[in-house]
Image (cartoon, rainbow, N blue to C red; front, side, top):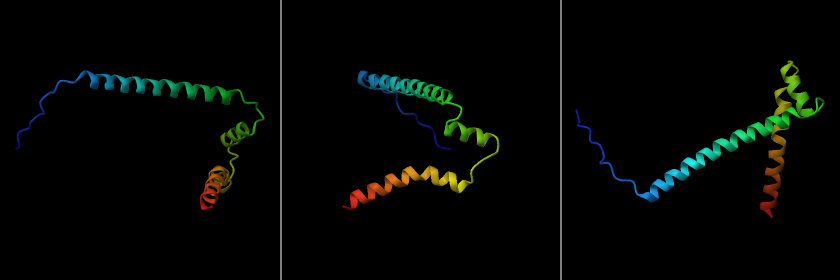
Length: 93
């Protein structure tokens, strides 16, 4: 069996400690902004009128009245397809 050797502990320079601090602050900011974004989007969803198309789609899917997968796939891919096609045409010039 091989003996385990551990690396010697090296003192952390103050500059590295500052970088570690910045990573912690960045993680906290990411966490807090993610929560606020989720909260704001949820609020926007709740303030939509009952007859909005997005809310109707949600209610229809919850009640079992779902559109076929090929319809929802086309709706989902359409904006990406348009942008990709436009970029391709633009770059081909």
